[in-house]
Every structure is written in C-alpha cells, then in structure tokens.
Image 1 (cartoon, rainbow, N blue to C red):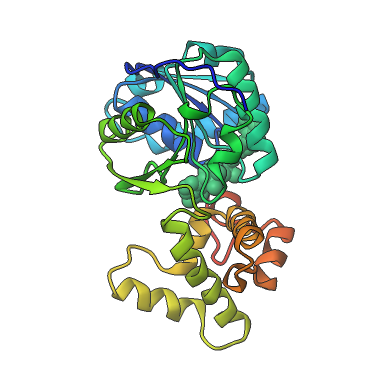
Image 2 (cartoon, helix red, strand yellow):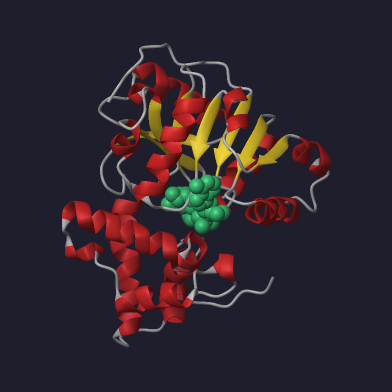
Length: 282
Ligand SMILES: NC(=O)c1ccc[n+]([C@@H]2O[C@H](COP(=O)([O-])OP(=O)(O)OC[C@H]3O[C@@H](n4cnc5c(N)ncnc54)[C@H](O)[C@@H]3O)[C@@H](O)[C@H]2O)c1
C-alpha cells in the first residue's frame, strides 16, 4: 500500500460516477438535480445508453428535465474522470471488479480527490489498499433516490478531512449522514440481510406466502415489504452481498437460500429485469 500524503480536495463541482445501473443512475440524477456536473460511465455504449434512458424516463414529468440532463455526461472510458472533484463507484457488487476500478481511477485521477464506493457490504479497506491514496477512500452507501440517509463508511485509514468532505457532500445532496465502521454489511445490510433471507426461507418451506409477509410489513409502517424490497435491490446484488458477508463471518444467517440462487441463475433479478418475486411492466 502506497500513500502519497495530500490534503483532500474540498470544493466539489464535478462528480464522477462509475456504473450506470440502478444506483449509479440514481447518483447521477440526484447530483445533477442538486446542481453538480456529472460524468458517468458504464462498460459499453449500450449499457450507458440504457442507464441514461432510465434517468430521462424518471425525469419525464420534471419541469427542469433539460437543465438536469444537460449536466450529465456519459462515457465508457476512465479518462474523463480526471476532471472530477469526487468519484463514486457503483458497479456490480464484486470485489475484483471494484479493485480494478479503484486501481484505474487512482492512476488517472488527481491525487487530492476522494474516491468513494457505494458497496453494500464489501470491505472498503480492501479497495483502499490497491490505491496510492488509502486515506482518501471511503464508502458512501445509499440508494440515492430512495434513502433519506447515507452511511458514510470510514476505514481504519480514512482521514478525518476526507470523512468531513464526504459528510458535507452527503448533506449537500439533502441526506442525513451516519458515520459507520468498515464492518461486513456496515449497519443497514448487516441487520436487514438476515431478515430478507429468512423471508425467502419462509416461502421456500411453505410456511407463509410472499404477499402475506409483504402486507404485514407494510401494515407496520415499512414503505415496502421484504419481497418488494428484494426486487428493488436486485436479487444478484443480494446474492453477491450475502455470499461476501458469509465469507467474512461464516455466520449461517448469511447463507443464500437455494431459491435465491435459482432465481439469479434464471435471470430473475427483480425490477431491473422485469421479473423477480413479482412481475413488472416496462
Ligand atoms: N440495489 C440497491 O438497492 C443498492 C443500494 C445501495 C448500494 N448498492 C450497491 O451499489 C452498487 C451497484 O448496484 P446497482 O443496484 O446499481 O447494480 P446494477 O446491476 O443495477 O448496476 C451495476 C452497473 O455497473 C455496471 N458495471 C459493471 N462493471 C463495470 C465496469 N467495470 N465499469 C463500468 N460499469 C460497470 C453494469 O454494467 C451495470 O450497469 C453495488 O455495489 C450495490 O451493492 C445497491
């Protein structure tokens, strides 16, 4: 691990987002709505176009649609990220993919900028140590369009200055911020994943129906039931996440139910593919 000591950049005007899926697209949209210039990438032109179209669709009714969209610039490479003041990585929940991206971003980006990850459960320190700036790597975890608060994740080497900049950035997006330790699953997914997996096990063993479980949770004030929530998260993301936490903790609560594995194999990933526990129109 190298570490070139530099004070992290405070002024943020241009935000980079890697990954134009559900979360990356959400970050790009929210940042542009809050006045930031945004550069967003995906692996191919086709994936990028798909993600940008989803943003456009969500903004269809907005009076500021054109202004907001004019702030978002797509790319399939890394070079344009050299102009950004802060970058958020939001690609598929796989450590190897994330490490490659951090290595590449670290190479092309100015040394003073913060590189953040939106990982749901993975060790942020493992991503930090592939860079020359481990003290400027941290987690900003949320679903930008749905969560009112963000978990800001501090590793044991994240600097206080970087943490403060990330906290202010979260506040500028209109979010509450909670600083969290770099533990598997952080707070939200560490607690909620066992519940979600238990709900799958209940339907798998015919102890209850998904509709009844969702109705009861909504009646207790949850905005969405566990199955609706899993479809929103993406069943692949849930599966990668629970496997990763299981690897770290060997806690059987995080072993994936067979039904979850089968659904992911079948490509039933939830809202993003039109079918998960429920079916979705376009
Ligand atoms: N889905 C949620 O509710 C949620 C909430 C908070 C955090 N997260 C985290 O956010 C991240 C993204 O999740 P998502 O739901 O947006 O997934 P997603 O499957 O909707 O999107 C991932 C995107 O990353 C792209 N991608 C993969 N490798 C890439 C690369 N090398 N370069 C550029 N783009 C690449 C994919 O093509 C895809 O468009 C994950 O780490 C996930 O754990 C998800």
